[in-house]
Structures are given as structure tokens and as C-alpha cells.
Image (cartoon, rainbow, N blue to C red; front, side, top):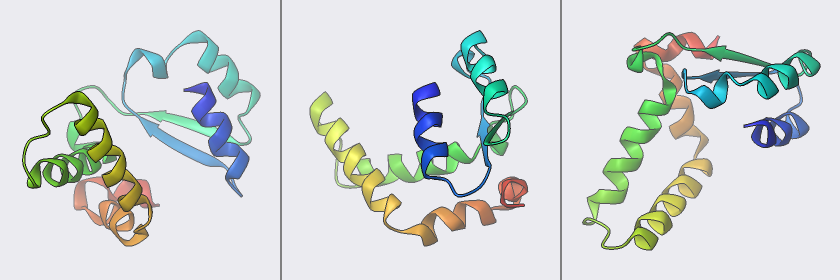
Length: 112
């Protein structure tokens, strides 16, 4: 998580606010220390437990699952990984899709 956040703040032109679920990796001592040291560059907001509907990741996951399995079920782990990477790269190239996630009524809090 720290490596990811380091890369993120390196390319961001302003303070980054990351919305995360309550996974233990998002609450660790080392991460808390890192966040304190980078508080002007990055803020981590933890979603409440059992609030799946507030998690933007779920919209991406839903799109990913429907796209990867649209053409049939991957037969191997490698095929699943390849199709997943391909889909995520395509999504990355289409900011209109990512923007649309933020327009969903239950997650538009994150667009403010």
C-alpha cells in the first residue's frame, strides 16, 4: 500500500484523497506513520464496515467481472490474469467510464 501511495503522490499535482475499505493493510502501523509524514500530500479515508454500496471499487469490480466473463469463463489462472489486466488497461484509457462511476447516486460523495 505504501509503495502504491508513493507512486500516486509522485504523479499527482495536488493532495490525494484515497478512499479505502477496512482491510487490515489499510490500517497498519507503518501505513499510519507514512500517512502522518505525508499528510500534506495524501489523506486516507476508511469506509465504514459493511458499507459495500459506498465503495467505488465495487463499481469497477462489477464492470470487470462482466467484461472478463462476457466472452466465456477463463480456463486458467493465467488467462484470468491476462483478461483482467487487459480490461483494466482499457478502462484506464477511457476516463469517461471512470467518471461515470462517480456519477452513481450512492458514491457521488467521492466526486466532491
